[in-house]
Amino acid sequence: MDLCRCIADSITPEEIDILINGTINPEVNVRAACLQALDAEIDLTDLDFSDKLWLAYHDDVEENAEIARTIWEESGLHTKEDTALKMIPYLEMEDKQTRSAAAKALSDAVTQSPEMVSKVVEALVVLYREKAKPLLPQYDEYGMVKKLNTRDPWEARSGVALALKALAGLFDHNKLVEFSRFLIDESALADRNSAVREEMIDAATVIITAKGATHVEELMQIFEGTLEAPDDGSEVRDRINEAVIILYGALGGHLGAGDARIGKVVERLLVTLSVPSETVQYAVAECLPPLIKASRDKAPGYVQNMLDQLLTAKAYAERRGAAYGLAGIIKGCGISALKDYRIIMSLKAAIEDKKSTSSRQGALFAFELLSLILGRVFEPYVIQILPLLLSSFGDPVIDVREACSDAAKVCFSSLSSYGVKVILPDLLEGLDDPAWRSKKGACETLGAMAYLAPHQLAISLPDIIPPLTTVLNDSHKEVRAAANRSLKKFGEVISNPEIKALTSVLLKALSDPTKYTDDALDQLLKVSFVHYLDSPSLALVRSF
Image (cartoon, rainbow, N blue to C red; front, side, top):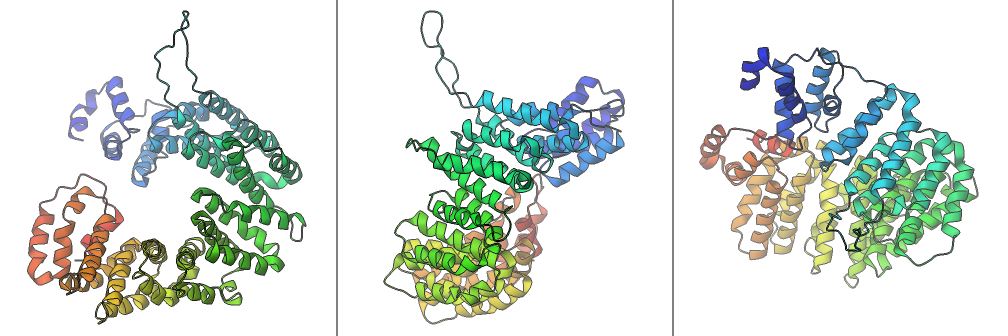
């Protein structure tokens, strides 16, 4: 800022370019500094367009994007017809933030020039084809292998997937059938890179959900033809079939209520839940609700099928997938289905089954994913299942304890202030329980509250930390260890380096304000903040 203030009157175009280049630097603080300097000191009214400032306009960090928008508007910059095409090279960048910004910038530019959408999609497909070519060795004129870099340029393909998803609402529905054939015939849905594969499936699902209504019959024929084609046993074919089933489910959302094909689509989706991929299972769970709404008469059978797999399947992936399926079905039926089908009672019985580890673990998977998929509406049941979580933290099997920790983390992350107010007294009371296993469970559950929403965390920290620190001197070593692990979790959710370095000092001050508050405040006064201050960090400081 000081440098730019001093040279602003005589700054050269080359120096302005250096500052503008800094606005797309991979490091967030560099981008922020360059944008602040440009906004405060540098006159850019001689420019009519800047591709890098257009990217900064769509920065993932909202504070940076806001400054870039101010610069853009005050400098009188504007997009052109070919702006979207100019964003395509930035989709190849190694930095994910730049690729994400390029995808949003490209979509925004197409919004302003809708006639460019077909040309842009065609350019994206060409880029994908180029970057998806097999990494074959190249030979010189003597037949010797050249020593070339054979690194897979997966970032470019990732950028294409991000851009296609961003364009979903603008996609030309007349090109949808051709685009679907590209995804299947050229194996874009089975990309050799797992991250690109997931992003491409995500993009295709969003596009079909947005634009598939006008081509249901044609797309249904393509998907069914793919699924019924002879299986060559290859991994690529398996991946394509898995992805096509997800797209098939997304397309099924456009079928009318009572359509005979809905049942077939649901059954295919439920079978796919056994695939050992969290991304595939989550995508299936997202596809199920509209289909279940259109076939509610079959919901009891689907629920029972998922419960059976959840509690009895031997494979981990099958139980996990059944939990996703159950959550998707309940979302489609409505929260009342939990009571109508006595699901909570069945899960409670499974957790109390001391002979079956898989039943206890499966029930905890269900609690986790019901909370994840249903969100805030599941909160009353979180309060109801709290005793089950407390008891499961002390389970003798480590897999069950880990499943309990994951379930508590997800359940607490969406709690409202009312939910925290109801749950917290019971947990704090558990710290005084004479049974060490109950006390340990209370410690573990309080540790999971580190994943509360930032606002709830800020309110709750002063009530959680002091009682938790008193347990550090408990006579039982398991209880002491649980309290220590829980306190560390509150430090793990903090990403700001300055606050992270002071976490132990701040936690001590919260546990014993009389003795340690002055020391903590002295330490805070000495800190010079140079990194972005995340919400949990602010919550910890605010709790004083």
